[in-house]
Image 1 (cartoon, one colour):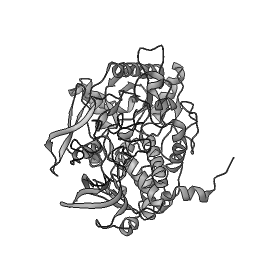
Image 2 (spheres, rainbow, N blue to C red):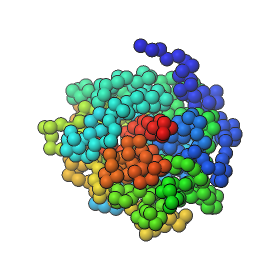
Image 3 (cartoon, rainbow, N blue to C red):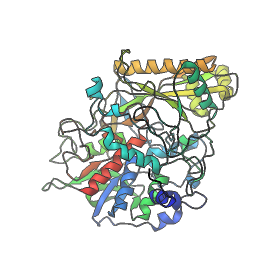
Image 4 (cartoon, rainbow, N blue to C red):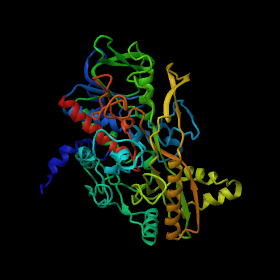
Length: 544
């Protein structure tokens, strides 16, 4: 068994040592980063600097590529820009106009969209489980969903690498492909104690982690202070996000991050059939950045929207849309949350929001009437979000105030249910236009019977856990979480937009490396998988 030295850890996780000694982003990196001109033909231009885009940026910069990431939002400085306040954190979310529809519309904004360098991961909960091996062949195994054009073993080394780079803390994971984590699990807060107690009494296996928060100081990154504001941006930089874990290293290797740049279209050469760069708007001025390779990482709403808005004589219905697949098979996870009241004070907000989990119900159970499954995690809604839970039950006035005053006595769990990829769940272009004159996205969503059965089954398990732990009252709110799909990978162009290497079938130098390429979503939070897929795509691209 090989032993990793401190020097190897530092080389792999250089960003942790590139922060200032007190754990802040070093302003000199941004001030002194390499800046390219629009006229420079970059080796690659990346649209978006979230999970997929930032991973590609760091990887390609380390390969010596001349590369820049164009990000629609700002280049955040957590120390100056972020506060421990729910209401004041809405600037982290993508709140540009969008339309929603279908029989089960999905609200967009704070729960599933990010804005700025780091993307949605600056306000994700920090939970980083892997997908299971079965997620990669659900159609063959269960008769639903889709089979990926790559297998779990092909992605395993990238899972391991990203878990070390974040790094991830947690107990040994017995589900899917059993594995350990680089850091031991964090101490468990009140919400986690309730979960573990209820699971033991109910005969359900539960584990602590995995969270992308080092257990202890790591490089110049400080220890987690367990203040519970992971979803509002980690003020102390303990929680991993690309802004902290990959962007500094990318800049140190010569990459550029160009914030406040809204990409409006991808330019094509009619003669060669190759992408030549991207049109974008910065400071109210239209610009064009030339590049040999274009990489789109705008996530599952903006990536399809950009492709659909990038029309040409060759692609009159949108770029890479020869088979009407762009925008289709967009998925969310059913994410009901069930809370239970206890006589003792729980103070669920203390500790990372997702801290304890079970994946015992993740796989298809042949005794059940539905396919695939769900996971259950601790979640810890802060007061404003908790008020939404209470109001969803119809409480108002004095009754509402009583529930709010009782906040510290409640524990809350959340499920992630694997909703199936359906072609009618899709992004199209609306009639309304945004401030740049571009048609906005219309996202239509409809649940199938299998989806609804999963939500009901998950809710019953959460109620069982809370009741077993001693709750004397439970309430549930139905909601959604995460967005994936919309430009999915497949073995051929008649079933997907990109291949296993994230290269589009229609344009040989156009890649997509965000969550939109995932053919299925499992019952796991998608951030780790998005980063692993992007890391693999970067290796494959560099090898070309």
